[in-house]
Amino acid sequence: MADRKITDLTEISATSADDVLHLIDFNPNARNTKITLANFFSFIPANVTFGSASSPCNLTIYGSSVNANQQFVTANDTHIFNVNTSFQQAVSIGDATLNPQVIVNHYGYNNLTGYMNAVAANVEVGATGAGNGKKLEVIGDTGHFKTDGDQHVELSGQLNVIANSVIVGNSTIGQDFMAHGADGVATDKVHWAKATSTMTVAKPAQLIANTTGAMYVQGATQLGDDTSGSDVKIVGSSSKSIYFDSATNGLNADIVDTTWMGTWAFGSGASSSDITFNGTTGNMVWDASASKLINQNETSQLGMLEMGTSGGTSNPLLRVWGSTGAKGLFVNGTNDTVVANVADSDGFTIHGSLVIGADGTSGANVAWHTDTAGESLTFDGDLREMTFTATSQDGFIMNSNTTIGAAASGGAGFHHYGPGKFRFDAVPVIVGNSSVVTSALSNGGAGDIKGAMVLQQVSSGSGLPDSAVIAAATGLQTQAYLYSRLDGGQSAIHVMDSAGTETKISSHTDDDQHDYEIADSAIINGRKRHRRINMIKLAKALEEVTGEKLLEEWYD
Image 1: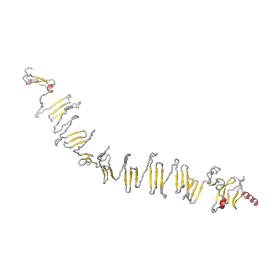
Image 2: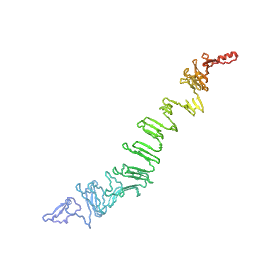
Image 3: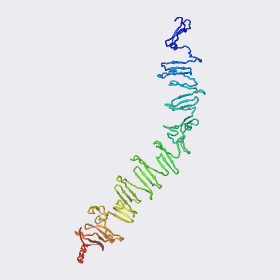
Image 4: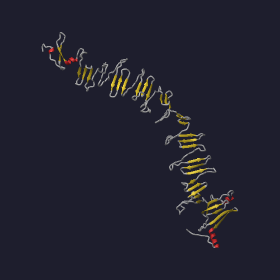
C-alpha cells in the first residue's frame, strides 16, 4: 500500500459503519489519521450543504424499517416523512423542559398526514395585525373547520363542547352571533345582534311552537335574575301578545283562545295569590287571603262539580244567598245537612224525578211544616209511617185520582176517582181497629174477605151513638148512623135516625133457632122503649090463620 495515490484506490458503491476514511491533518506536527463512517457522521464540525441551487440533490435518511425514511425530493422541493406505523412519534421536537417553536413559512399548502399531539405546546397560526392572518382548514370525513385568515371562521359539521363554556365576544368588544336553519332559506335563523342587544329566532314555515317550531328549549330557561329582571313579550297576529312586565312582575295576555294541558298552581301554602277573571258585566275573583271564590255573575257548569272529599276528611260549606234576608240554599258538610230557606210561593221547584233515601238500604225521614206550630206532614223512613197533623178546616185536599194500597189504579185497594167517586176494589171496608180479622174467612177459609164492609164495636158501650143524647140535640136533622152493637153477646148492625130511634137490621134471636127478628128502640117521654118482633113466628102464625104457605126453609 506504500507510495500509492488515493485516486488510485478501488472505489466501492456501498459502505458500512465500520468502514474508515483517510484523514489528512494540516497540522505540521501531526500525522495522517483515519475515522470510521459511523464516527464521522455522528459529529460534523461544520456547515453541511447538499447540492446547490443549480445542481440540487435528493436526500434520503432510513430508519429501522425499510418503509420508514425521511426524504427531501428536489423535483418539488418537498420533505416526506415515511414513518414506521408501529410508533406514534414521527417527528419529535423539544422535550418536557424545552418548548421550541416550529415555524413553517410557505405560501402554498403544508400537508400533515397522521397524528399531531400538541399537549405541552401552543399551536399558533398567523399573527395579530392587518395582513398577518393566515388560513387554517381542518377537514374531517363529512365536515370541516376553516378560517380565511381575515375574520371569518366556518364550521361545517357538529360542534361538541364538553366541560367548558362557549363565549362569543367579551365585555369590551361584543360580537354578533347567527345560526342558520333550513338549507337555502335566508330568513330561517337565530340571530343575536350586538348593536341592539336582541336575539331573533325566525322560522318562516312555523306551524306550532313545539319541537317543529322556531325555538325548542329542552331544560330550564331563565330570563333575568333576582337583581335585574327581564321583560318577555310573545307577539302573535292581529296585535295579540303575551307580555311579562318585570317592573310590576305582572303577566298580561291579550289573546283570543287558549288551550292549556297540565296543572295550574297560583301561590303556595306560604304565599297567597289573588285571581280575577273579568267579564263584560261582572267578574270572578279568587280572594286568596280569605280563601274565597267570588262570582259576580252567572255560572254555567257543564259536568260534575265536586266539593270536599269522601270519608269526612274535608267538609265544605256551600251558601247560595237569595235576595231577601237569610233566604238561600245552605249545605253544611260537617253535619251533612242541606237547608233551603226559600220564598213561600214557588220557592223550590224540581222539574224531574226526586228520590229520597235508597231502596232497601237507607231509609230517609221527610217533614213538611206549616206556619202554625205543631202542624206537619212527616214520613218516618225507618218506621215506614206517614203522619199528617193540621188544624186547618180543609186539612188535606187532593184534586186528582188517588189510589191507596194498590200497585196500580185498577188494583186492590182504595181508589178516589171522579170527580167525587170513591171505590174499594177487592178489599174490605173496615170500621174498627187493627184487631179486625179479614183473612181466611172467604171461600171455605181459603181466601180473604173482599167487597164487604166490616163494622167493629171497639168496646161495649164505648163510642156508639147515644139515642138519648141525639134525641135531645138540635141541628142533627140531616144525620143518620150505621154501626155495630153487641146484643146478647153477638155483634149486629144497627142504624139510628136523627131522632135517636135505633133499629137492629141484622137481628136474629139468640136461641138455638136464630130466628130473624126486627128490633128497635126509641126515646118515649124520656125513657128508652125497646121492641122486638120474631118474624119467623109471625109468619108461622099467619100460615095457620090464612092457610097460605109463607115460610120456606132448607139446608145446604
